[in-house]
Length: 180
Image (cartoon, rainbow, N blue to C red; front, side, top):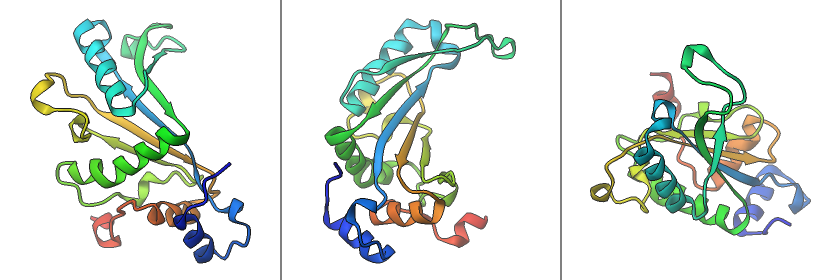
């Protein structure tokens, strides 16, 4: 059951939707980290697990290769990364922290491109450094890795999802910056 907030009501009015339950909403957030060639480095793996658990508030799940790819030296069953799926209260808390604290802390951040929207109502954002998250202290970590965050929503197209993400506070770029 979706939580009806003032944002939901404003969005329903802006989109001319009479039924409050038909308003698009975020259903889950996926936070992923790939380990790449460091899959055999135990210190790196432990740091990724510890930091991802601190960022999301829950233990990450190991992701293994589904098939072998010779060009990448990956065999079926090899560890390729870690993922966390957030729903409910943890999802809402992560969303608030991500938009209000993490994105402004990203180095040289000028807003999100509209290219993060996939055309089916979802948004995928990649961060080159996990140090942007407030839970990570740069002086206490030796290992820096990238994080992928995917917001899965009930929106059916990019226009609807863009309206929803803007209402939630996502800072999208202006058109002039996207064309450069």
